[in-house]
Image 1: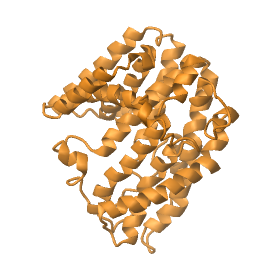
Image 2: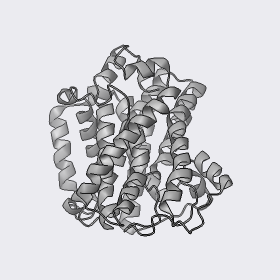
Image 3: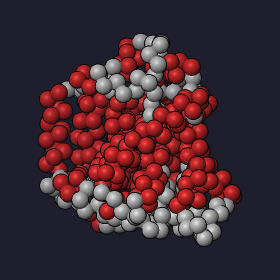
Image 4: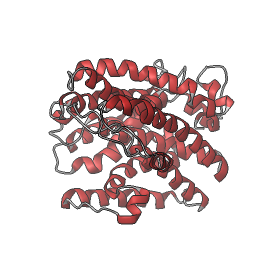
Length: 363
């Protein structure tokens, strides 16, 4: 019960929606102007990262916490896998259908061939990837990109499978082994960053995803997993969080420093924020978890807005318009699709009508 109370007092829903909105801010610059050159965090860090990158990393940290909680609470492979599929696939499939049969026709020249292969569509959607399509948004400053946000979704799902594998093999009980894996992956990313190596992965890369992307995102998911394995909220301490933020800031002045600092100090700072009492009144998830829908639809909606403006747009105007329509899309996705695949207690959690268990919260 204390674990359930701990989850109810966290700000994960609020943070996820904020992170989704920050992704829209970040994308507004390359989609509106054709370059990240004036994106705020890109400028501040001298090109080392963007608000979009920071947000995706935050999503992986939060997922690491919640998905590990889910397994530890109910270590049933079938229940775990059913919940993960129910949470990821329905909204993704609907997004893919709308993209293929509504957005692609709108985004192509009226005289162009707009056919989408049903076979490729089915296989790509099953793999949580973008399907092949004709040239789209050819007049935009960022042409031929329909939804650049979807790259992270298959990596997210494979992380779920990884937790399932570690749980079945009882390796989650060996938390220092998981800690060793965490630092090994960081070391691998540091090596790739220093040497400029770019392994393709060959067949395994085709199945599991681009190895360089794994080097980037996996430490963040593992940071969330380790947070849960080593005691979760009991690990948090305000002075330590302040020191972590200072180290994080300092890392941007050290070559390759963010590779080490972001999944360690950055993850700790984010999790400290997740349990900060000052954010509790926000409670942005009181009516529903709209962050996934916002994330899925924001990119193509931004491209449509830019196309309607003639191919380019002020990033600030683009963000204002895209945030509004993306929030509407996220709300519709939640109530019409996502919510219907959750357990009844998990639905009630967002309506404030029940005291859900931890299992319901992370379902």
